[in-house]
Length: 306
Image (cartoon, rainbow, N blue to C red):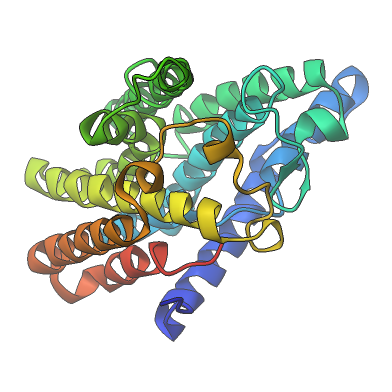
């Protein structure tokens, strides 16, 4: 069943989306001089679109520990820069070769391929620059933990590693050796899940929270991330380009490893529901009513249409 977010979640999403948009506008380089084209491409990829799921996770987790919004929004903006870089590179002809992202031409189509590569590189670097700034947190130890956490989530044991496994999975599928469930789950835990886990944990890092609090948030986000990916697979199978703002059906056509392809529609839906229920229960039990945004976000992840 498709649902709209609850009024409380809708208000939180609207507030954070607007605030993160403003933070990105402030933190991204203004187009100027010889780098104006590069600056434009970075801003084109980052501003004016996206679900801001990762940003909301960072802010909502930070709220649990009384983190000032100006700090959590800087972290949220850094995460969104990193995410935008990954999408730029993922859309390139040498990767998924997509023409549409967030309802508009992909960066290499709107500009050119070389500029797209550089825009992704620039966004990645800018994300770490923001995290290392004392304005994000005055304590060097917290700055270092944020930088290390994002580097781990984005690197060869995180998002980039998952992308490499995904490319290899296409070769395996073509050779008649498709990935099994555990292998697909590991792929997605790296490619999509690692940045989602860091987004939730980043709020706890900012709040200098206890180790147990960080573990609960990581485990919640791991389940949320897997449910998110299953929902994405379902939407790729059942949704429309107009709803999603990107091409649909390409993963199946390319022989990519998907949960729907392995489990079928009904079992994939049931798995997403089970993961969502577990994630909601985890934060509700540990954090109580203060975690309501996190609980409702988990529910929205599997009922959205985009």
